[in-house]
Length: 303
Image (tube, rainbow, N blue to C red; front, side):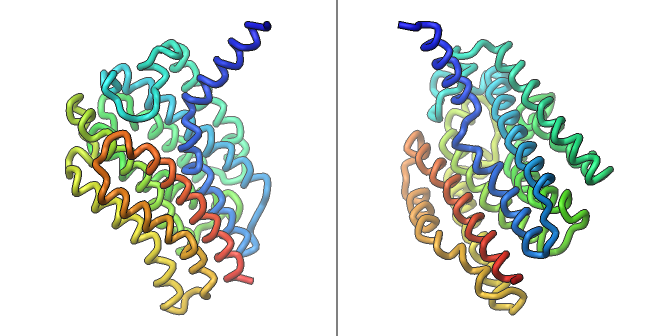
């Protein structure tokens, strides 16, 4: 039996666990939506779109590794954690290796990022620098955003407005009101993913002094926030259609509404804790499905 092969496979699986693949739809969905707007107004350019997707994925993985690393150093991840296994806290990967993985991933994001810089110029440089700084400041530094109730705002801005807007900009080299509005929708959906995560961890975060927005507004407030975020995401296309600004195609995300309603009901009635792990995965799934449907709707609306 080739034990080296087994060990290598096990190590690879552990690193895959560290990247938190269930969170990657949060990186993919905004790029898909931004590119769909570019297709709709005939500004799509495939190479910047692909580069934007690679950057988004690497930044998401970098944020995940940074969160794993810094939460362990600050004593936030403990044995009482209810979420998926954290590789640093559990000892699956040595702390120094997780740090090195974080640095390597963020550094690799600079390669397609430099190409995008040649395409988009100074605005892309500013966006890229802000993204790198925010990735590290989310859990690390003297004022970690996630520990001071700013995680939700961070996600809304960077995974919604900046991710959708940046993807569109590197293709069209300008922005439109529609791009910002679609960024708002994406921000609402992806923030909902974070809300489930923080609602699950509300007790352990409170005990370790991590003041997420969920800790600040409480259990019931977080459930209300989740419902309002999803409701807002479904209300905007309806307003666009009813106002006559866009055709009925923009209502395609309505086909994902049964899943959304099921999740709202579950979040509202659940007892919290580890049972929310599945809701977390399903909210990420909902985000991707909704974004794909909206993308198709936007393209068909502009035909």
